Amino acid sequence: MAHVIVVGGGAAGLSAALFTQKNGLETTVFDTDKTWLHKAHLFNYPGIGSQDGTVFLETLQRQAETFGVERVSAEVSDVSESGDGFTVTADGEDHDADYVVLATGANRDLAESLGCDFDGDLVDVDVTMETSVDGAYATGAMVRAEEWQAVISAGDGAAAALNILSTEKGENYHDFDVPADADEAFGAMADES
Image (cartoon, rainbow, N blue to C red; front, side, top):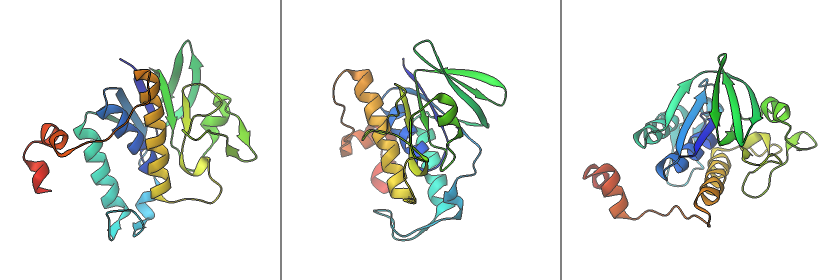
């Protein structure tokens, strides 16, 4: 089974983790819980009229964990290529992954040390959020000049995850659920929420 490591637990990181884990890829999120979402209040997120950023984040964390995403409270100090994948160093321990998603807000240090190409100050990515390093993705503020909002970040994370899933499945992958899928995943409670 492919293993995905996501560095950062904000909207982009947790969106990527949710998509990959729910579609059968073992996913671990390393996070220090210092996301900008704690300072936000969401008015612009589809389906949410008005919600505190921390409340939204806690809901997203529970949702990801429900699907089996492992969340680890640890600071990542290095990401490097190793063999066919990556080694992520968090709190002095190494962890291997087939894919890595960098969702560290505007902090581009890990992308730089990994050797990702830059366009000026921004990490250079394609439309699927893949960097110049095969299997490494960058999302959110590190790839966008002054375009910082949860909607874009969540979409970036989803784009990265769908590309990883397409690579693993060998065809374009579509994550489109119907009510029966929710019933299977959550039981009768899905109808009540």
